[in-house]
Figure 1 (spheres, rainbow, N blue to C red):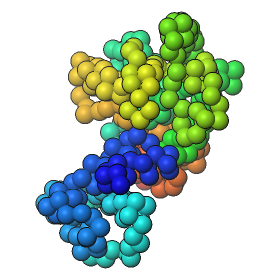
Figure 2: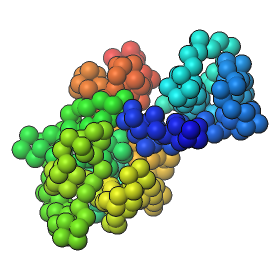
Figure 3: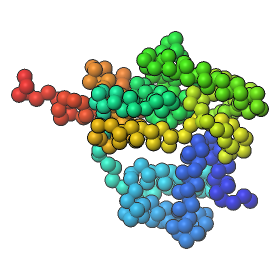
Figure 4: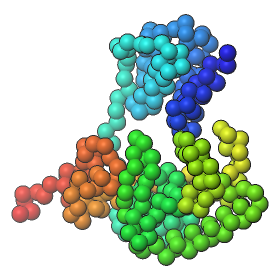
Length: 317
């Protein structure tokens, strides 16, 4: 029998979960086992799960979302790997959900931020603000996902494993087209050297054996170096790291006169807020952002530049 964590990895890959989910689940299962002095999970059940998850809220002070991921990982272990059905676990002390308003840049602040970026970092930050993308949405873009004629971007397997369509900002089209011409040169060189493959999701690699090296499937923002896929062991060109873009945006904010604690995600917040300020209805903004529930999008009505909750004071007529 393979070791427990190897069994976890095998089941996760059979279900086509992402590499990030695999890493997170394995880490939380390890922490659960060490919390109970390396007892095997098959010897434990609801009381031990309740103790571990409650401890995260009481003593570790983790966020509500982190606690949810930890519980999901442990339930996955029991239900999918150990094939042990658990009843609803009562009595878990939940971490309190934060109620914070998102930081939003003004349009002037966005322009100043973008003016301090160049090259790939500029293009990615422009897409975060100009199309409302999450950082990983932008990094995972493939060549085929950009429609220059229709001015559209297709976001594949976004948060919640959903596809959506959003706009392609026309102001960066020339730079993006020039960038893709340079990427094509790199890809052609990789093919000549016996490489040129990228990661394909799910079973697409078996279904379309040549797709991994085809131009339409290449990443729009590829890494400068080839890397070894941790699952298959094959040498491929992945997309650039999120840390590179995050660092560039942080430096640009620090060097500017913005005076706010922002990040890459602040550009997405700003996209939504500025659309609402321009008069677009909230359902349209919800669809562009890919929010499942309109209540998630409603948070941006609280930060509109119109006073509290976007309501005009009766004193102002």
